[in-house]
Length: 283
Ligand code: G4P
Image (cartoon, rainbow, N blue to C red; front, side):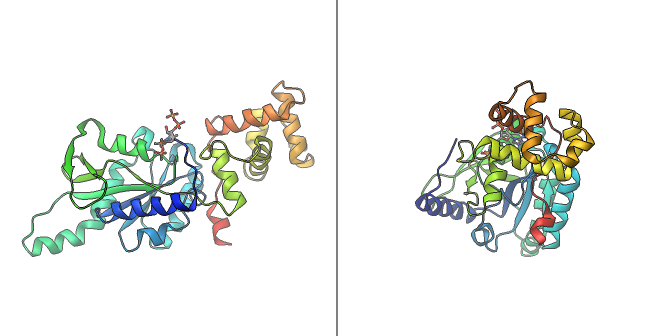
């Protein structure tokens, strides 16, 4: 499932996404709610162009609710429809359908005035790897999975999946590349597991996560690793990692401890922690 992105691959991904875009009414741009900015393609606005779109923060079940809401407000303040969902547990999907209908309502009104019967709303899902695109397609379509045949005029056969009576969904998502320039973005993608075999070392990721925990979730360090308030105030990140290593019973094997800490984060064992904040985006 891993994709290596080279300029040629990016051009191809963009071309394929654009081909799909031409076929649909509304684009569902999917991001990871824990890292909405880091999991957003840098050229997304340019690629989507004038096509109506909704930014959908998936995995809301494992993100920090308050932060997710702040992100929703941020995107909406920019005139971008935004919703949070948990595709895995099918939460928020009805609201997402409603939002698509709302976007299409003026168009269908006009059509109706011209005597044209309403048709299904055509959707596609677009996003970088690992944000939950396949999961959302599967949950959206559910058991009523039925193909409605191919549409002519595109290089690759695009299949439509029926979603109830009112929607049709492209069976394959548009896949885009993540941002690479900003080291913080790479770090966030690696911590969440979006980049699997990254060049980043586990101990660097663990230290980055510890920094976030120290700043915003000290209670996690206290509860999960029995660190005292005094320790949190006086110890450096590295010293905290060494303390965690001891608490895990790993003596001085901080490499192993780092790995375990990151896995605990990915498995949501540390609680709902978002890495990207909209505040940072604004400064
Ligand atoms: P992609 O098509 O965009 O590449 O993503 P995909 O659906 O494969 O999902 C990537 C991972 O994210 C999967 O976990 C999937 O289960 C998980 N996921 C998708 N949606 C949600 C959600 O709403 N909440 C949570 N908590 N997780 C979600 P995985 O570890 O790669 O595989 P597995 O554990 O499902 O086997």
